[in-house]
Amino acid sequence: MEFVDTNKNKIVCPQCGSNNFIEIDESHIECTYCKTQVDTTIVLSDNTNQNMEIKDGADVKITDNANVKIKGGLVIKGGTLTITDGGSLEIG
Ligand SMILES: [Zn+2]
Image (cartoon, rainbow, N blue to C red; front, side, top):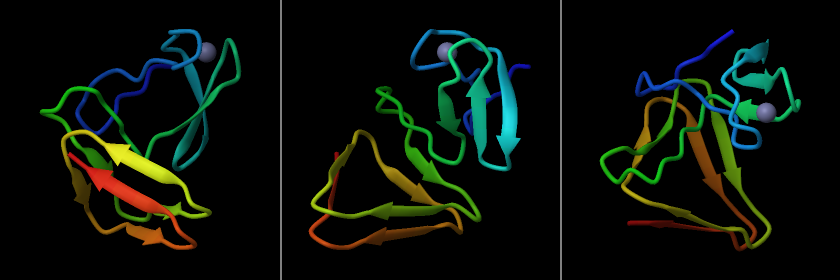
């Protein structure tokens, strides 16, 4: 089964390039070929016209000195973003 992200683009498996997934729960799908799981609440893209989007109900945590860089921008639509324990978020 094919899925689309929040920008209506087909989701492609980051591991094997397949676009055939099964749904695991509300926010996760699994590649039917290599079993890679994709979190559908977070959309990351190298296209600077697109943003990372945290949708309603998503709970994103950046912890333990993780340094997350996002190209483009960050859109929070009702979900939560928590940064603790030395984690950092860089946008741009
Ligand atoms: Zn795959």
